[in-house]
Amino acid sequence: MTLRVAHYLNQFFAGIGGEEVADRPPQSHEGPIGPGNLLASLLGPDGTVVSTLVCGDAFFNETAEEAHAAVADWLRDTGPELVVAGPAFAAGRYGVACAHVCRIADELGIPAVTALHPENPGRLTYPKAYAVPAGRTAASMKDALEAIVQLGRLLAAGDAPGPAEVEGYLPRGIRRPGHRAKPGAERAVEMLVAKLRGEPFLTEIPIDAYDAVAPAPPVADVSRVTLGLVTTGAIVPMGNPDRLKRASETRWSTYPLASRDELTADDYECVHGGFFNMIACENPNFVLPLDAVRALEREGAIGRLADFYCCTSGNDQRLADCARNGREIASALEEAGVEAALLVAT
Amino acid sequence: MGPESQSQIKAVADRFGTDDLVVVLGAADPEALEVAAETVTTGDPAYAGPLAGVSLGLPVVHILEPEVKEQVDPEVYSEQVGLLELTLDTDAVQTAMRKLRHEGGE
Picture (spheres, chains in turn yellow, orange):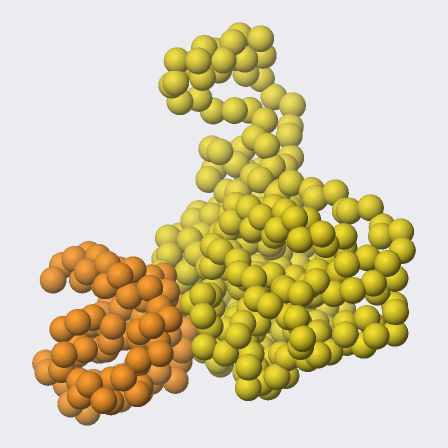
């Protein structure tokens, strides 16, 4: 009997299009689509991609309840023995959608597997999902699907996979009791000796790369503070003087705001590559709300606005760069006497 | 590379053949370049567009490479590419292209 596989894809990988059709509601199709054809050939005669659910990334993330219900209905109707979501690579919203699909499949008792770049935020959405590591882009499609098929077969057979480091999937933060050849004290000393000698060693308790950021204490009296504006929405002076990149930017920039009451489309533009930025180019205040903050300043609701803003392209950035940029921006604001910052959602 | 671009390239290759066809890429990001180059040589790695499983084997160059630039009317180049040339990291693009062609066995 062949393995019945159901496959989840976003609008891009289904070949429908990019951001302009990301609001497509979920729709199921019989058989494989796009990368599902490669998945089908890797499964060989032992497996069949019986159905594909395609949903726009914007729809899945902005209309979550409806999207989740559609996934559950699709899985009940299709009755697969294995669910494959993605691969989503480093695509954030797609990764989150794939993680939800794995969660919903788990809740229905169906084995599920996805493939994510280790920094994909989908890993935080549902850490218990079985996700094999993928590269940042579709260039690693074949490797990712091969790993998916290998792990998927194991899960579908009802076998509990071994530890992440043995089976090759991304760690799920689950620890199980088991036997080791040597007691903990001996292993710890061996690791310490290796570390002191500069030799490679493998920690047994990896520190989670996503550390929690403690929120700043509340501002006591907003009407008396100097407020700083910060955006990851890549609003830059026209011509992009610092050549801020559309994606994968490692730097941040600062630009003056003094004597401006609002941002105009003649003087500013949006160079962010992660969303449809035409509307932000037409009215940059939608992303960096200088007009609204100036109104609050006039009303006396805030003390005063700092005479500059800080800016980066929050799109496909490395976590290490984000953390460093955050520290640098915070200290630049502090040096300028800013007491509170408004980081506007992109 | 989106399905629309893939479909246009495929149509051109079907009509004129692949012998005298070169693809001039414009993507700025080395990773996007890798995907675009693979799409028109070995086939769409994303398996999302018309070039999925279609190996055109077309040579790839980039609009920001000096060999390409010198073949374009300077006025047209300045009008169409000038701003991009100033904004993008041309060295990174040129390095990425050399690496891609090397890996492609050219």
